[in-house]
Image 1 (cartoon, helix red, strand yellow):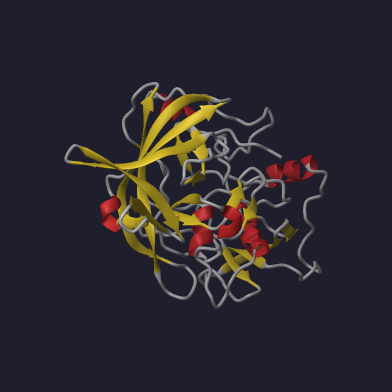
Image 2 (cartoon, helix red, strand yellow):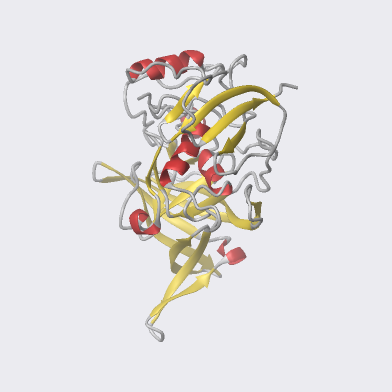
Length: 360
């Protein structure tokens, strides 16, 4: 599987970051049409970063570090020179800060909504058992303006996050989500707060293999995801393809959520390669009736399952500066697979079908 070199190393080095650039292996990264390496979730992704390192989840109790070595050590807010420590709790898509009361012998919500602004996640990064860096992730905005993209109608919480390093050197604040999308997405849907992220629980992901590894609170534990606007994870939440955001009238299975993950990332041969550019116009529909907004179709692209593309006609980036035909062929060959066949006569046992909108 192709690993992805993180493209932000040069830019973040300018603000004093000393973390090593993590490539994962010596295999070739996915490259877009401009010759730049792509993050794990696709070229031009607005993935969450601390230092030069991309990440997507944290464990709220601080018991465990994530795959990149980041662990929450505390969640605090300072008011009038007094710092109070809270227990962070993400339930569904809502973050609160809790305090323990000896009067009720239990936890109660002490920080929520706009009062979260100014609160800080203190995070250590550990490499081979040694703390190599300490960060603060501050909440600079908390909103309830983003509409779900699928019925029933409703709004969900989003949060603007900024980070700074405090050890071994101090840096100024930098957005965790540092590549905001356009307000109008390529599939005709809206990002109301382009600098903010969706936090959600209940699902866990392996972003190297692009798979869903847990699909409910019992199996996902105390982990929460950070889905920056424009990213695949945020789109899964807005399209009600997560445990936290699924509709009671149209619940989704882990296989269906993984199919949407593969579809958005364009992981054609199920190799973990995100062979797309974020913001590319796309239209999709599911066999359960969910769909992106109706827009004119230029060409059929593919049918998708939890194992990637079942068949492939014209890839969404064909004829663009970011044409991925060579990368698709290489990814499939590296996995010992052929590029999926054309969709004419292909199996109808799929979950999603994609088309590319008509060119302007």
